[in-house]
Length: 404
Ligand SMILES: *Cc1c(COP(=O)(O)O)cnc(C)c1O
Image (cartoon, rainbow, N blue to C red):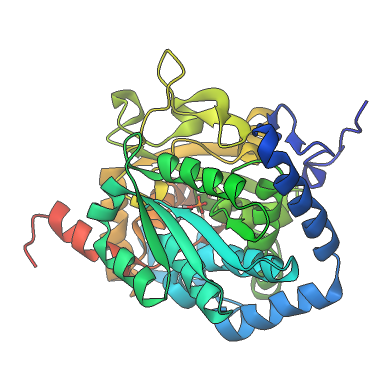
């Protein structure tokens, strides 16, 4: 019998399972890499020298801690609970992703890796990985679907500027899931010198727990900042969900605070009923992908369906296994917001707060609006503003019918 953790924050168990989710469903040839990584991470995560390195670079290179900001005019507009933003959009490279890349690249150095690989969909994780790899002088190879390369030219160029090599993936639909398969294949072939930086709380154990731990800097800071500014914990912590890393990073330090509702917002695209969405929990079912068991978008034959969202960062057809566990156990709630709602919030937040949000957190804002009304003026909401919208202005202009 393996021991079952008895508190939400203590998962995964020794086999990397979050209840019936997670685990390590990988080819035999990949097992040595995964085990070596697990051992290295276990040693690093309690080593004061490693943690100090992380804190130092988080401060000087990323710009942490990010502020906690009272969104006064949105609070007025929604007419209910007080709304606070955790401003991770102010990080270097414009989103939360770099927190995780910093942690993994520091670990890669510690393990003596001489080559970094990553997968990317919209290119945000590729850019963040290439940024940190450049800082430490490590060669970086980024796998990207050929379809995505066409759609995301500015990010492809950014990665090149940062010295990374972008390899087009033409298998499948030429999107994120195919890039992830290709990166796993590279990792099997180049066992000795290569470190694979996964961009969200997915993949085989220890990735979901490790990425969560690196992103938990968001929730740790925000929890302390809320106590300092409001003298109490929020009634709800809200974040958007692609693979689930910014949400897991926000949620984890609050898991044992029973009074705090944890709310993840998936991308409903054109509507969860239309089949054109990215809502793995609200519109998918359990299966196995990328080394772990979790909720996935799949057809009746179990084939993975490409996700759809106005926001390229949310269209991953799965979700981190810890979210699947928190969903089934009821500790966290998972709702969704459509493309149209995200577009509306994108514009509203820009006008009222002087903050152009990324389309991803604009989804979260749509449910913050409902929640503010539900909780009323005595309520307190914490939302992770996980990315800035500079990257999205061209897409939004097109949707609004404006020619730039
Ligand atoms: C990549 C990205 C996401 C989705 O990833 P998670 O792992 O769910 O956090 C959300 N927001 C922004 C700004 C992103 O760049």
